[in-house]
Length: 212
Image (cartoon, rainbow, N blue to C red; front, top):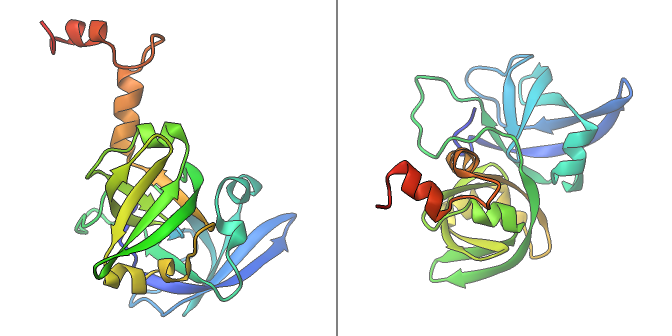
């Protein structure tokens, strides 16, 4: 479990074949408490398990499914990657609840300036857009962001200068793929309220006592 607050911006050192599968490695500024083998680290928002660790560097195995369903395979060698260690129960929840389980890859449709900030528009599936609400939360490449606009198949977020410069977003361009994880609370609401008749209906609201 994570918060979407990036703790380190590492450098992607590449993918290699190991034991018939893939492993990635990243370099980074060391943490005060070193990474340990077996702990979870979010890389561009993807929850991975550390398999090798030494000061300023770690490796993690990556499933073929993960490479197929996320944007990790498109990260260039020496490219910036957002890193976050798993949340401790005593930590402040400064962002929102992020699982590190990517829902889909979105595509950056546009990056525009709005005053000192940047507006990032990302194309996504209609299913993810349906789970996204204005002023709600979305994780893009592991960064907890507030939704400033949403349509049928797109969403927008405003990026303050600090976030732009202190994360991998500074290297993103229109057309790039990004990892998207929707708000887990929205997923549970949709699941609990869903029905064979198409989700929340007037009949369902009447039965629940919301409509008389």
